[in-house]
Length: 180
Image (cartoon, rainbow, N blue to C red; front, side):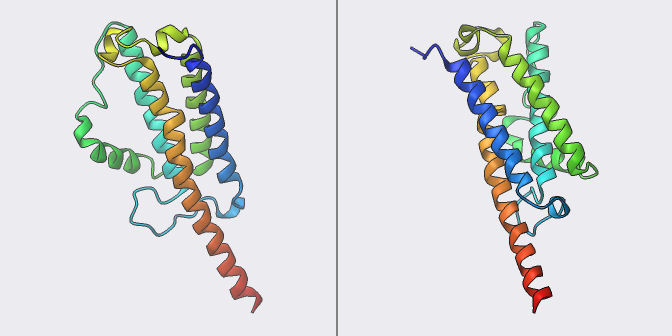
């Protein structure tokens, strides 16, 4: 039996983790927020992380729209299978290299609100009951919503903490260089 409050817990965790993500970015001086760090990882700056989240929100919104229209959405994206998710994520990264951090923040705030609104229009039963909607197959809306909000934000928080730490170290090194 699933707790009656799963929907509320999902909304609370999603908001809490989203807020934490933005706070990490805001903890870095504005002049440093757009800097890329040296890392073998795909995401080298805040923009990369935010646009990754934004694109996954957009995919979720497409799956949801197509599913609720009675279709079975192609997941994760046309031309990609779950087994080729790394390639999809690289394509996402490539597609957003011209976006500024300010644009990324605005886009992500809007997509976060749209997904939050989708969660809110459903009852707890609709969200947690497996196979409630044909398009979710053996799963439920909860698994899609939590994977693309709360849980994905936890991943993003960890990535942004690494970026913020590296940027603060760069700032400290520059301070030491200029004050000696």
